[in-house]
Image (cartoon, rainbow, N blue to C red):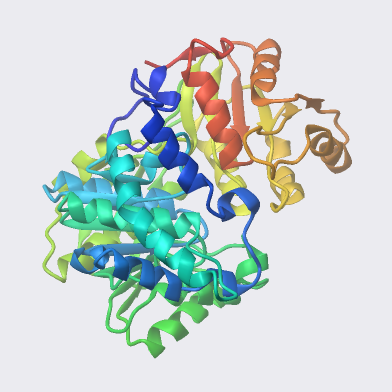
Length: 483
């Protein structure tokens, strides 16, 4: 759930974590949507034939092309794209502009994917949006039945629903986060005001390529002719690939460490509680001065720099978002499951890291922004992720490890396999817990009130653990919930 609130709401601690108002109409629409081929559930296909944009364009055409009336900021990147998107959206919203945000995947409810001014779509709106797109989907299903192509996918349908929702809400701006890659992503049918690429690292290599240059080229596929672009990419091979695409498409490309820079200001030690620190950003246009980081982690300083550079690029196109709006927007921003602190005594952290780069960011955050303390890791991941690479980064930071799995998706790695990998890597014996509830209970037994428990390795695991923690009626008592 995305809100411009700094801490979990009371609703999140109870009924909102469960599916809201599970009436027949709502459940029927969910059944229809989840009945589609869902790459988030099954894993992504390798063949690009399954990721064509023509089908998405036809779907939107049948809906009246809702995207053509929207002013869109399109955001791609291996990591940081979600955080950067929510920062841009929060600042735009605080400036008085009604702002839509499309992001994926969701943690607890499908409606989280489309929010306006920090308020996600309601169940009733989800029903209405599904009813609006369903005839178009069925029309394309019938057309595709006579060809070798499938009908619209889950992500294509939900992307279309998001764009339709923003049109219906008369959004003055839309921040549109890419699902995967860029060139063939379902969101890449729009003509944005600005394209943003946050960072490039290894993830989804089966689909995007095995080199940073290849991955960067795919993500640079969101760049459009004569559309300005912002890049936070500094790795030479990836940066050169993005520059090449930008040159081909005549984009005004502004780059980190060339056109804008930042300095991370670490929190003062010793720490008694988590502290994010500050960042000083200078762009080709503005000296933003020191700004409190809205999210925990030194890596968020780079995301803030990209977000502020994006606002400056928009300012050159007539948009007006000043420092006061940024400070207001950032002050109330929350991005769940991104080094999210949900409890204390012991500190309880949930993070959706799922690749080596995001594991490195988490490790740096724990070392920089949290009190020095005894740490317990709860780890589970997906079959298509670099488990060994993540664990090599994380294990040195933790005194004990509990291996587990998420339950609501078949892609999870068995806890016993995770535990074996941990033993192979550093010789320690990890506890194998059958599910997140057991893992959380075991972690509480083994971690004192002055310690820290961190759940990570997968967004699916983060979502299940977060629901248990916030739903006090069914969750084990793991620390004290931060109210």
